Length: 176
Image 1 (cartoon, rainbow, N blue to C red):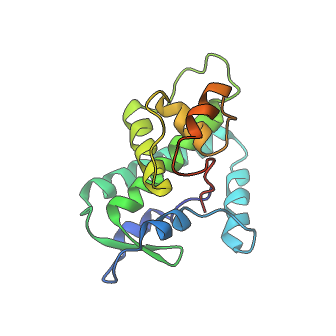
Image 2 (tube, one colour; image 1 turned 45 degrees about the horizontal axis):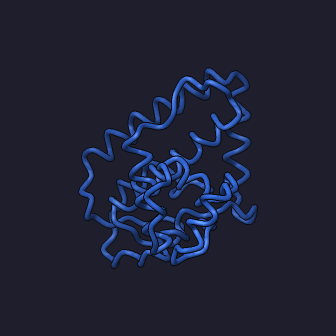
Image 3 (cartoon, rainbow, N blue to C red; image 1 turned 90 degrees about the vertical axis):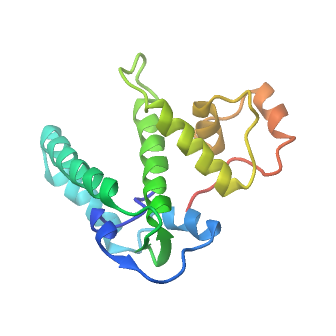
């Protein structure tokens, strides 16, 4: 899944057009197609740091600035990203979902990984995934299971598969 916007600058460019419907919200999350020059640029920029600690420092710095901008932004304001108009609240929500999923991706094969995404991020991401799907996961699914099974990162267990048969939507969801 690609970043929902091109940069933290998106918050500084409010729009007056109406926000997109939920289907456009899931499209705004995007999936890199390779057609956009920025898809490849992101990978090249990350590789250019050479030392992973420099990349981490840069991301921490940019993340802190984006966090400050997000805290000051009106959640009802409208911003544009990937040719869609979203409210700031939905735009930031897309980031929460994306970063939560990527955090789970990064620790998936690290036994005893020191940290998991915060519980609040997991719950918010689950709610967004259910909103995009138009259906809820069974209450027996943990937030983590809902996110991993719901996006196809993990295959459902037999018990989960049986519970999903009663869901109003087919999982996994393809975001983008």
